[in-house]
Amino acid sequence: MDAQEESATEEEISLKDIKIPSTIFTSEKNNSVIDEEEMKQSNKIYLDSDEELNNALESFEEFIWDDQTLNKSELEKFKKINKLIKENDENFSRYISNNTLPKGYQEESERISRYITTSNEYIRELSEVLDNASEGKISEKDIGSIINKTPKVSGREQKKIEDFLDEKNIDTKAFGRDVKK
Image 1 (cartoon, one colour):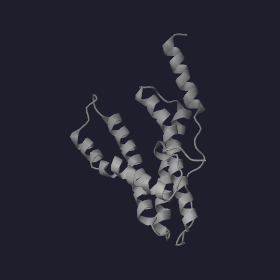
Image 2 (cartoon, helix red, strand yellow):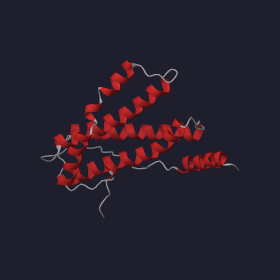
Image 3 (cartoon, rainbow, N blue to C red):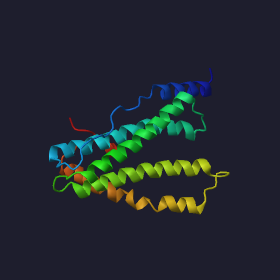
Image 4 (cartoon, rainbow, N blue to C red):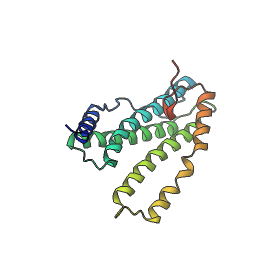
């Protein structure tokens, strides 16, 4: 087996072995008053789920970017991960919109939701634009629509989120942070 065949075999094994994270943010609460501990846990679950789902998705994206074709089961896994990312975003957004959050959490939880949702949409749209690019050329219109969203996904916004997480002592895997044990 040459190096190229060995590399392809490693790719197949790694995609096959990718586990779809089983936890996303869910809540049936509506018109409830949320206490601080529950809100901390809600932010943690949402952010950790997003991180795990995006890490799983990244392997598939690398495989696709290398012009590899996904087989039927890999494609189903890829679609399932994307569906869970969208559900995670929608569930958290609905939760923070339909409940009364503790003092100091509403604005920052909305910032977190906006940032993560926009980041996930940005990744999906960029992938679609690149997939649809003719002869590798991307139209200015497509780039413009994507760039217009980037102010919501910036280092400055991420820093504000991380400062909030630190202030409220919310440990999360998001943004490559080490979760304190």
